[in-house]
Length: 227
Image 1 (cartoon, rainbow, N blue to C red):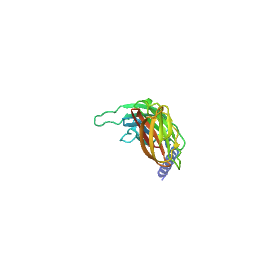
Image 2 (cartoon, rainbow, N blue to C red):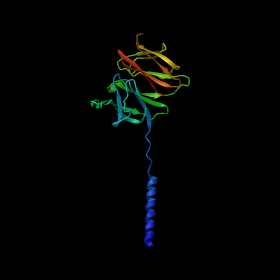
Image 3 (cartoon, one colour):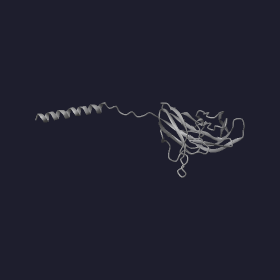
Image 4 (cartoon, rainbow, N blue to C red):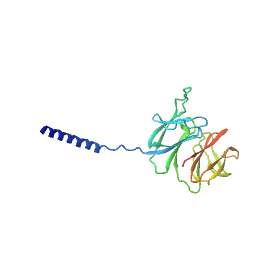
């Protein structure tokens, strides 16, 4: 009888101890994240990007003039590595092209980042902050000069001058541009000669980034949706 009583007391003490341990275990905090969109403004290279050796984009890679879409990445200091899409037939392109240290701040709701890759070296990549505030009556558009060798551009929509840039990495604010079909013309800063033209359709309440790519003799522009 006494032996059973001792055993019962011992089990009760162990149960209390285990409950205390469980109660005192702090929950694992969820890492804070911010959304980052990687945009390929390289002329002829499909890219992948990695953090700590793990590919962050889809297996198909990000094609020229394409974008990965917003990925949730941990805030704080991090290093992003870029590689060409691996050629699994000839086993080429396993090496890292370059790495880019970035600081992703804890930001307010509605703020994201765009990371432009305009070449295969660190100096041709840059990060910009996206403050997104849509307009219920217009499409919102900004222009990013992502062409390292083109120094200054003028951008027209339906023959109206909308943006003027003077240097690589220059980024405009988002502006309202109506909606519907737009005829795009891009000229040099000091000439009326058109170096690129195309057309596209913008939807009301959406936000877009128009960006340049390439050299003056092999120049294009891309369009990506921010919201």
